[in-house]
Length: 114
Image 1 (tube, rainbow, N blue to C red):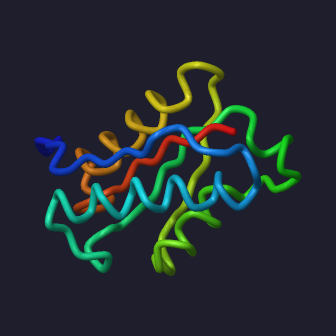
Image 2: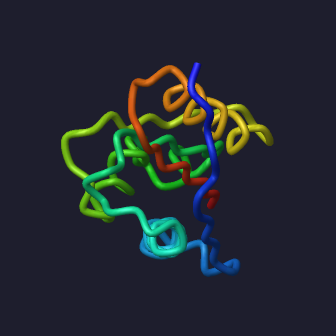
């Protein structure tokens, strides 16, 4: 297995719980993380999104794909993971395992809740 490093982070403050806000907030945080890491979008090989309840509340369940689309990431695996309060940690674990196993060189982890 390859070594894995966290190269960038980003976050946003708590915002409105409207559907538009929950889609914009993870995109802003992810853009900040990409800038912080100095990683180009074309280098991202997978997106893992941790979320527990926004899908049922918004009526939209393909959240990882929606966020990836907002970020301009195309043709890569986008996976939403759900594990109650551990959703973000599970998403992070999947990203680490994907990079460590050589499935991709860089993965983006996003956590969002509504």
